[in-house]
Image 1: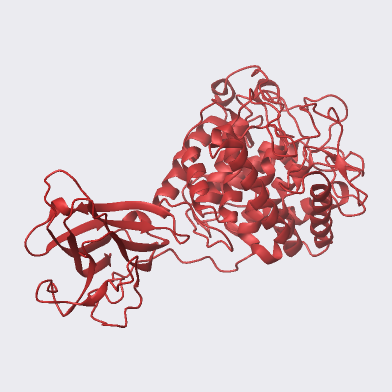
Image 2 (image 1 turned 45 degrees about the vertical axis):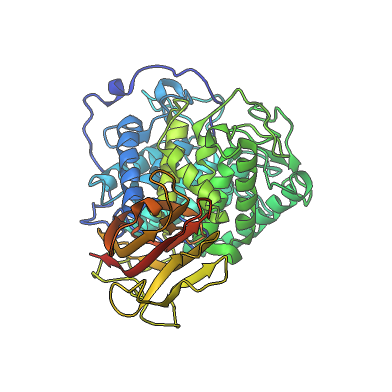
Amino acid sequence: MAPIPRVLTLGVSLSTLTVGLAVTVPAPALAATAAYPFPTHVTYQVGVMPSASQSTRDTAVETHYNSWKSTYLVHGCASNEYYVSTKGDGDATNNGPVSEGQGYGMNIVPLMAGYDSNAQTEFNGLWQLVKDHEDQYGLMQWQLDGLTCKYYSSGTPDAATDGDLDIGYGLLLADKQWGGYTSDALTWLGRIYAHDVSPDGHLKAEDDGPNTDTRPSDHMLDHLRAFAAYDTAHDWNKVVTRTQALDGELTASYSPTYGLLSDFVVGADTTSPKPASSCYQECQPDNIVGYNSIRVPWHMGTDALLYGSSTAAFAYGDAKEWSACAKKVSGSNPQKVYPHLNLNCTAYSTTDQAEEAGDSIGPAAMASGDQSWTDTIWNYLATNPFGDGYYGETIKMLVYIVMAGDYWNPVAASTPPPPPTCTGAQLLGNPGFEGGSTIAPWTESSTLGYQPITSATTAEPAHSGSWVAWFNGNSTKDTDTVAQPVAIPSGCTAAALSYWLHVDTTENTTTAKPDTFTVQVLSSSGAVLATVASYSNLNAASGYQQHTADLSAYAGQNVTLKFTGSETDTNGGTTDFVLDDTALQTS
């Protein structure tokens, strides 16, 4: 279950918990290699990727994993067990585990196998702790003490649906990664279906809870779709269909513009579900977005990324609405995506802040195709402005994997993808403009209606050949552009842009820059990723000068290379920018 925030941490330190315990790992036997070693790059079905290069994204995931693992993945309580500690949040005594965190760990560790050489040992230990602490229905007791691993919460031990689902998905990941977990996975999914799924197909909040409520943060549609493909003995498609319908019914009535879902919902077994009362279970309040439902945009965005705008139509639409709401309410500042939101997309409180509220928007921003918002959230992931503990840092770990493009689907492919390779090549088409009037794959524009790609003249000769891209020089205000889309392969470690540029001017100034020329890299949606070079009338020189720029940061991306000449005609002179013999060489 999600934490009630800002509870004081209880008990002993992690160092106390890890002293003197040896590891004995149960069956299945350790696999020699991981079938999908990190990083295994994924091409998602919709949306955009962060503008950072693939290698930069992978490194960021590795860096955070090192921190997360050293802080939260611990031995206990038996020598063949591991658990994810709730250090920093006080969700269980002595920083003990909750089933939600155990499920997160069982997702994270298989996805990091290959980078983490001990991943299968750690996964088996996580799974062993689950098996050692089952409730009356064979699902994980949701809250355990960190020293004894005895059930900590009051009453009869029960299980939380979100933890159950993530543990099940972790078993699917492990079975795909190493093999040998099929029987365990099918048994576990059967228990979930029997005790966490209501008769009409919606997910209950707990295995011993009523059939009338649900918790939208449990609605991990990508997990449910995977279960349907993996476990054909149970009607998981019924669960998918009812989950989408229920969420649609709720948002249509209570958040039609923003698609927000409250922490708890009652009347889930009817066609008129509604937000629960404000103090239904956790009193955050429970009838708005709180520390539970801040996870919804992460889950909806991930489902859309993996399954596309048709199969995951509801998640795709809802992710776009959540992303737009978060951007609106925060002023495009992830720190101000507050963890408590009213269903009309206004802040319930601005005094409570948490990193996971902003982090969780990342997959939704990607699915919505909002490049600048995606980049802002990606950069925000590298921070922890409020000093959050287990909950924020663990959600961040999973969001990092999704946003980096390393979140592979355990039921989508039967053959592991080959690692990316790079065959060195010059990537630009028509690099010297010698195609003449057939300018493709370049595009061009001019505010004065000219065609920048033109035949050279005696006054403005080509560097080689007989055609150039000639910008400005009209003695009047003008902007000319020449651009070309290009895909830089992900396996390439070097991508060197080169071009020859001649600048001459009649501007009579040694300080002012009325005429400029820029070289930019644009995203596939047209957003400026970087201006890699800038020139002006002050760069005038006789003959051509060769220039270079390193574009290796954009390996694995589809970008557009754009040259822009701008003349303001404010000083009475004019400037010619003449471009020739471009190249983008990879290796």
